[in-house]
Image (cartoon, rainbow, N blue to C red; front, top):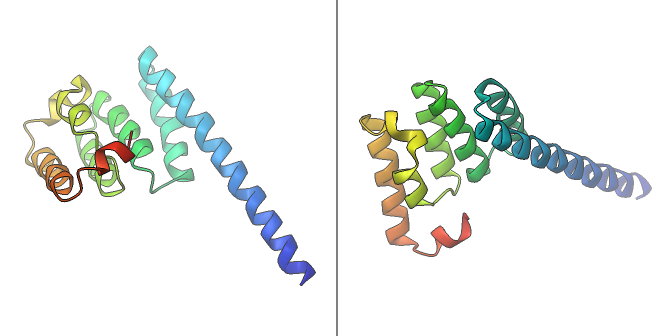
Length: 130
């Protein structure tokens, strides 16, 4: 029984550490995006996404970095993953200039349509992702 408690304590500590790394690298990555340091932003946001691979908001920020860096393929892949993992701010998706170069892509249209469909089914989803 003592080893079960130790394992639990260690796993809780590990989860907290990973969450701390995610928060730090997400903040740094978003600051780097604001400053236009795209290489650093991508590196930081990739680490944040590795820490929480199912966090739609983190993935959305990584997709922004890829889009701004003109890596359309990765931007679209990660943007789709962000929507699949709960990102639901349709306004940001449709109006953010970061994605302007993607808007003519069929994959981008499919991603937006997927989000619109989900919002029709669950309108409260938009409130949860912000």
